[in-house]
Image (tube, one colour):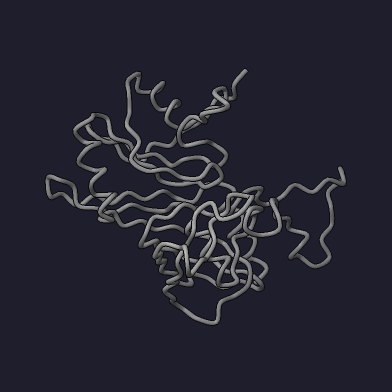
Length: 242
């Protein structure tokens, strides 16, 4: 039996709906594994009608995703996304503490650059790619970053942060671990009676926090997605140990 997915609705009108996507859920159906649930299918079941996707998040990324509820809105807002007139803000928890407060990462990226289908910096074949990064909170050996992608390359944030020496916690594709445990950062850590430690977070610690844009009716729309449970727990534990 398929596990029921709870979807937090962030914004809703007759033409748009925005939700806080849970980590571990595909944005759209997988073309090969048609049995795996997706956010689009879950929402279409909730609203009992067709929805149109405007942008995507990786399966392990949580946060705000916006859908159109009719073809006209999809057409109009797709143009805004294509023209980079939608301001996106993410938060990421990364390894190491930067020595800078704000930085513009301006490194060309090549998509599907190796056998693992990773995006990599490539001065010859890469396309222009820019990401603005601001330090929000410093921990002992990690940091919380506010991340604003100015271009929209696949895996741009993950590849850019790795390239400057700050891979995201839990990013097994671009880093070296798929899970993050309290025992790795807490001295004299004691296991519970079961002797089994559960990870604080078991996915890439990246959260899509907000979308900001001017609609075709000249209304300014800002949508924010609060940190989901595992991301919030990670930030809290790192704060305690700093």
